[in-house]
Image (cartoon, rainbow, N blue to C red; front, side):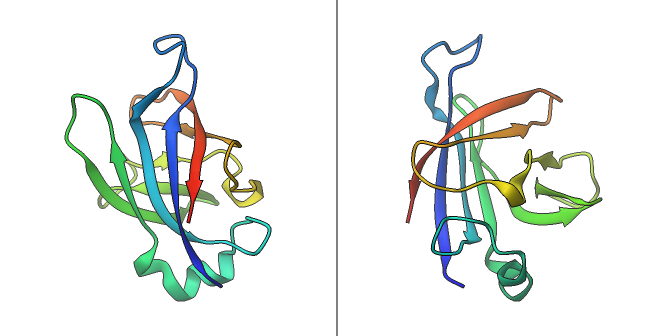
Length: 118
């Protein structure tokens, strides 16, 4: 299963009515030909499934895509405190223009637009 680099940018929110391209995530995950996540591919390439969280005015955070407590999360270190769950990650179609919701460190679920899949 090919690994893809997926770029997400913050979509429209109350704080950012036009979204913000300086806030988002770039991560690597195995996708099938239709853009669905492949959990079996993740098992064989989990060390390559990395994430970079970038946020305007903050240092980048680097972590991994992991399966924890029956959900998919971006994790930046040991323990659950820094985990960011991705809503229905294993059911999304990762194609440009679609949206993904991620619950961030502050407990707020925010929408992100898929900007590129390469």
